[in-house]
Length: 85
Length: 236
Image (cartoon, rainbow over all chains, first blue to last red):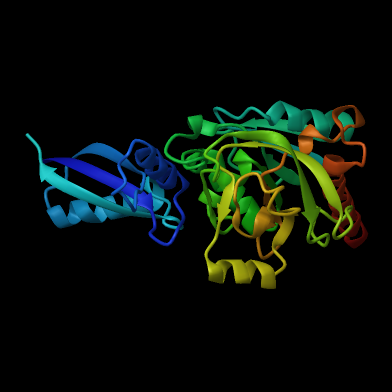
């Protein structure tokens, strides 16, 4: 089975996000006054093979996020998986 | 006495550290490539230098942390070996879990390269015992991700265990927005030390180290190792 995976990481809610704040100010300067709570994160795309079971795949993704893709001290992560061709 | 300096792909302060260790302190110093060595037992101190290991991709230090030599660094540290991480070296030690907390992008979002005033908050460590408590140093910083973060409980723990080794003098001197103006911390056991400022860039008078600023960090390590070596001589 081939899986297409999308992983997102972002700073935890409780942690000040200087990049998000800067982007928010930029949008404000452009006249978009109705925007708030801007957070800048990272987005990754992965292809994973040789896993049949979705639960197994999610377990592996959890592990990869905990160990490398995110820093659990300051970041939250989420992922979406779909079957590829 | 024998020191090791580890070079990761993208390290760029390794030669500066080598220069200070070898030419200023006359220490037998070996450069180690990141995948070269499995055992560090023969060294009295291991230094992870500054730079941009693996291009700082993903997060600073995140990929270097999985270089094969890091297993040896972790073993070495867990056995009480002296490990100092400067700048990117500090970031790698955080990613490796040898020190608590994490680095965020500087609050200014800018790479900051300048002299800052830092205060020695604990002179009772292997890395600061030649300094006076409260002594203020002028040390250069050069980083984009030095905004040290740790949660409230973690910060309390750092304070209770006297793990905060140096702080930026005040909010104005803090170049990155780090929690509690933290510039350098050690682990509970006090044998692993990470700091954002670059002592190797101000260890000679010609480079502005007139009060001995960066020099004293290296001098502390030398003093510590000399004491340890004397102790082991007497015992055996």
